[in-house]
Length: 270
Image 1 (tube, rainbow, N blue to C red):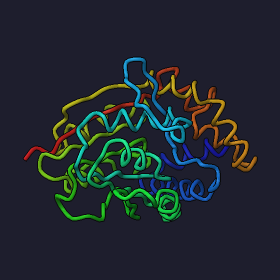
Image 2: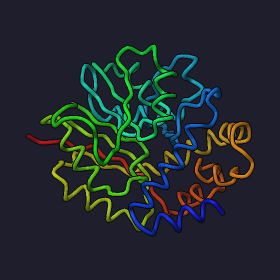
Image 3: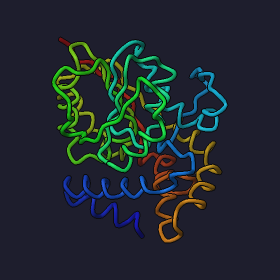
Image 4: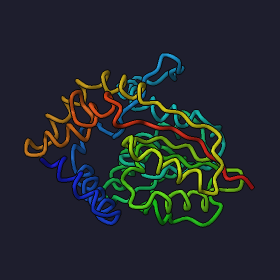
């Protein structure tokens, strides 16, 4: 029922879409603080992708980390300044900071609860910091970052074109933007048009739906365990839809082709 309510309200206007997701993520930020849960993506699993060797602490999050590793590996990050837009609980930014060796990485999120939690969870990582802010009004000056990452987040934004314009503004000349997210099949053309009409140059584009489905299959049991442990029963089913567990609405949309998962790399050409 809650999932159906989300869908109906989101269709009303970008304003409702943006603020509804903001409310939902604020609720997520208040759940499971002591669970060790620092990722909120659907994951990535491919036999063609070389998995990074992870520490024992990170190995438990392998599928979630794989998606970040895939996105970050599309471009060179070593020694560069990086911004992750919508960093959630900070697990992805922490992984990138520790395994991809950027000079610095800032995790930006509109949830103050998520920023507070991320800062607490990842305070020992020297090249990582977190800041509260809006993806459509990024709180940094022009030409601030070499690289911008955006993982499974932009479907929540009220105006995707505004976000892409902000990415262009904040990137340094020749800077790169690596993006991955889901879309309803009927929304793919609109999304592609936004990218094509932006000032950024598309240098790589892929569909990774199959790899995401494989990851969802792999981490199904873990997600069910986490939801049953930390999510109130009244919103348990809605949370399963949100998490993409097997036979949930989003999982079945991926399986039947009514939703796809896209990946792109773009560059600010000087």
